[in-house]
Length: 258
Image 1 (tube, rainbow, N blue to C red):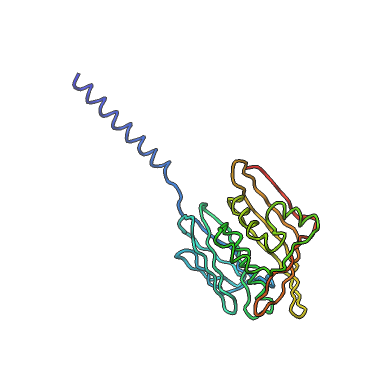
Image 2 (cartoon, one colour):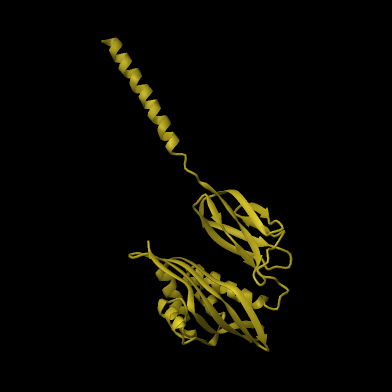
């Protein structure tokens, strides 16, 4: 009887060790990822070689084609990204990483271009809106002229109703608050800008790109690309937006439940 008890005890230990080994094998969770992409000139679209990109505590230099890759970056909801290059403005952004591979393409602004002040304002408006932070609303409004007004075409009116384009200067704070409340995640970009100047007026033709996820109870994913037009007026030493309109038809418009 005593021998049987020893055999049973020994069997339990062996089985337990085997289960432990299997459990350990299933718990090898990946907690680092790789970020790669291309750094380009925001005005020309050309790749920027020898740009320095720092993501968290790791740094890389772009090659002749503007490409970079950084591996073994720990997952985090808040990772600082900094890009510097000769004769370009410094670029900073905060991102999150929760996947093994993430593509991150970045456009940087040339400092010697006459378009640089306009591109800087567009970049600051984009980052401010993407932040979904009510504290950034006064700063966002400061980039608009007090006589600012949106277009009255159907595409622009749709964007106003959707809450992503303010109809006039005084409505900017409420529009931004609605955006911050409605969206859980928002990528908001002015792409491929074509800027022309006439005295103290700058006309910008570009693509307006939105990649967004709305908050519950009925979360949806929006993917929108449409051409747009903006007019900037120089007031003192600053350029301020005085007009914003979308140009139909939509290049891409997708709305999908999550």
